[in-house]
Figure 1 (cartoon, protein in one colour):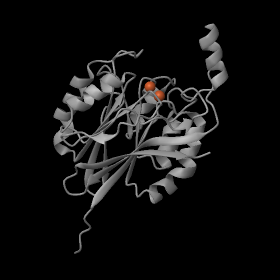
Figure 2 (figure 1 turned 90 degrees about the vertical axis):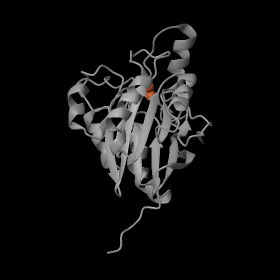
Figure 3 (figure 1 turned 180 degrees about the horizontal axis):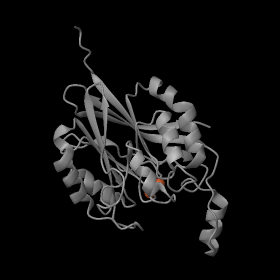
Figure 4 (figure 1 turned 30 degrees about the vertical axis):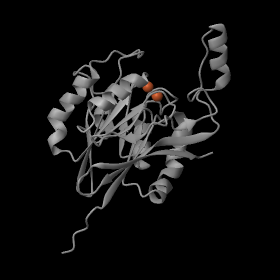
Length: 268
Ligand SMILES: [Fe+2]
Ligand SMILES: [Fe+2]
């Protein structure tokens, strides 16, 4: 019997999805993007998917149904009331790994594609973050120890404000994991590369959502608040919707990263 050999595996990893504009862009376009770019697996950060703060069970299901194979979260993980209960019914949703162990939800998600096992985890940074997390280095080390052996492609997302923290984690785990991608700042960086020992790396994937905004929110209330110090309601903006992230290409045999390419597609 002829056996199909997977020559390469391509993963589209998208940065923070912000609000309805991002959800609608995914629902309307992800199928076409998968076909055009030959994508096998899609991972997306959904921490801002519901009104810019957190994600509901219904929105996680919507995104999964639209073709997002795994959804990661971040410091907004618990912003939606009841999500701490709902998360246990969503096996494709990954919460930050360096939260207290007692927290609900999975800290490691596995996807299988054509016989290849892909593991996904994310850790929160500790610099300039409001949410208190334990050591990200130790958390990744532990995940590698507990899950690494059975995994062909090991993806680590670093959800952090400080570029230095993300870059440090990149160097620390170069050659130990398949890829390290940053999220949280909502601004895509231009430093994608394969590190010397073979790990694909980028400091930030950027944001999926409205770019005529201040990192996804309407401009005027943010300006008012920043200039006068008077708190405002920050609604999600609407214009210049783009999907940002990277396409990671892995060799079908060795499962090593062979390419990391920035992805940025203007939707409306
Ligand atoms: Fe975010
Ligand atoms: Fe965040």
